[in-house]
Every structure is written in C-alpha cells, then in structure tokens.
View 1: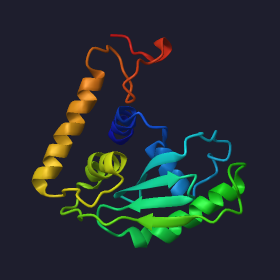
View 2 (view 1 turned 120 degrees about the vertical axis):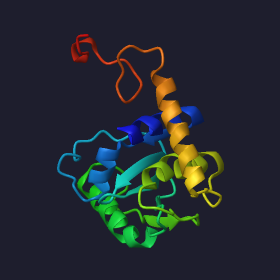
View 3 (view 1 turned 60 degrees about the vertical axis):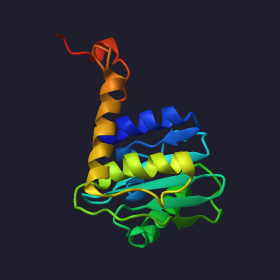
Length: 186
C-alpha cells in the first residue's frame, strides 16, 4: 500500500522514535473492529502515526501516549465529525487490551490547516503534507492544498517510493527484500 510505504520512509527520514501503525490496522482500531487486534503487541514508542480510512476518505490520527492525546487531522477540515467516534473506539480498545492505564483520561486535539480543494487528494495530503509537516514543525497551518501543491506532493511521494526500491530486485511495499520463499520466480 502506498500510504504505508511512504509513511515508513517518512518516519525513517525523521529519525524519531515513532511507531507507524499500518493503514489496515489503524482503520480497524479506530473503526471499532478489535476482534483481531486483542493480541497485538504494542509498540514502545511514545508517538504513533495512524493513517485511517473513514469510508473512501483518509484522515491522520497521531497518538501521543505520554500526553494521552489523539491529534486528529482531516484534509476536509471535519475533525469534529470524527473526534467522538475515534476517541470512543480508542478508549474501548485500551479497555479490552492489556495495554496502558485503563483509567487514564484521553483527549482529542485538532490543528488549524488549509482545506482539501478536491475530492481525491486526501491520501496525499495526509501523507506528504500533514504527516511530514507535523513531524518537521509540529504544525500543519502552512500546508498547501492547491492543485499545484498536490501535484508536486504526488510527484515527491512517487519519486521517494521509486528511489527506495531502486537497486533492489524484489521488494515489498516496505522497500525491503522479501523472504526467499515469498519471492516469485522470474
């Protein structure tokens, strides 16, 4: 998945102790689908980057474990629409697992930002603009959402993914060699 592949590169570039929760796992967790997540091994990092699909639309949830905060970023600017459900599902998830302080008070924070201008750029805005700017500056208020900015961001992500793969014969989305038994015969 492009989102997971680029998020992996982005987090690696920042050299910070951040856990990347895959888009599938994050979408299940924040969507209230815990059945297969109960036995999940929890990361030790204080910050988790979680791209979440909310029905044909991508948002970014950043979990700050030490501050007990979910930072919610929606390219369309509808963070308030998602906040209650995300927080409820996060609390329920913590309640049914053996992770963290079950009695802790968690909150949701949002950040001011420019809004998505079309119906198809949410994924690239979550990746290249929101996640990257948040990691670099701790702020997303200067994120550009114009068609030109979105086009440049798409090119940047494509180039980063291709460069990650460059020089490797058989790679997965994570830009790492697949185990021999999983490699296809040429």
